[in-house]
Image 1 (cartoon, rainbow, N blue to C red):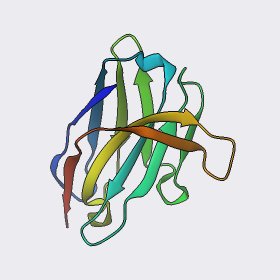
Image 2 (image 1 turned 120 degrees about the vertical axis):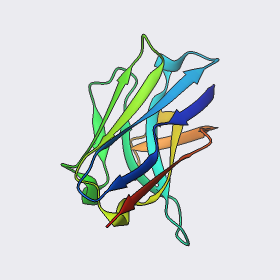
Image 3 (image 1 turned 30 degrees about the horizontal axis):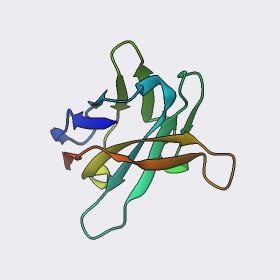
Image 4 (image 1 turned 30 degrees about the vertical axis):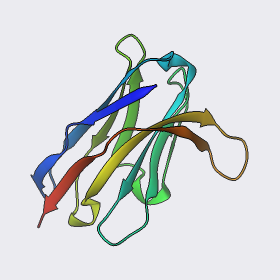
Length: 123
């Protein structure tokens, strides 16, 4: 599956952005989807994930209440709505296709990643 992330940009603190990740190739609805981010000088970290049908979601604890993940299987797209953005949210955001995991992590990437979209939050 090929993934194309978009929607990043420059926003002031307190603002909102919605990221999109469009999928093509293999059956999109067969995958759980996740968002990760990597800030400058830091390791990539998990943001949020959603199961194949869209009725189950999981978030990094620090982001609960501000970020919302959703998907539209008819459009082969997963979204990340980001509200009340903070300068600490500045990062490149990546989408990934994978599977629902019942181990230590809720979501397990399958090796399919989008190219990343840059979000910059100014103070």
